[in-house]
Image 1 (tube, helix red, strand yellow):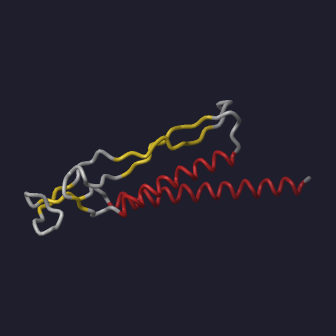
Image 2 (image 1 turned 90 degrees about the horizontal axis):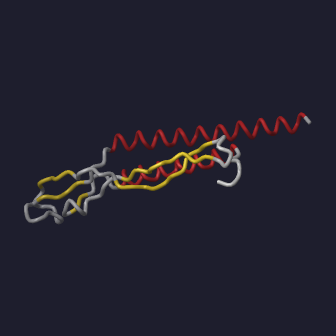
Image 3 (image 1 turned 30 degrees about the vertical axis):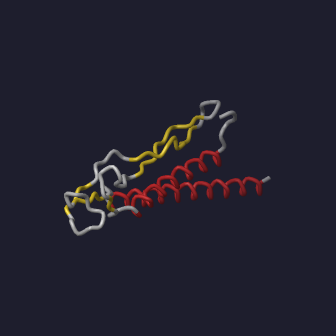
Length: 134
């Protein structure tokens, strides 16, 4: 980063990171319970990877998303010979998504996003009050 980050830069990066978290959780929830015909084809949950981002002066830091990766979790094998995707042994592979954990992740990301909106709103109000004082 070439310049110093303003509080708006910091907040917008934090809000973007929380949106990535919410989108990953939404994708995981959408694929919960999905099945595949083989272990390799089964859906694996997504997890964003974050890193600290510093400004040029090294005085302010925020977060950046470096990547979104698949979790290395084994799918659940379920014996269901009547399923159209069942393999030769009659097994299907179910996505290893913990719906409760995903809901908690989504709620936490939503709260963090909301906190940043509140911080920006407070900063805006303080700036307006400062301008009115002059």
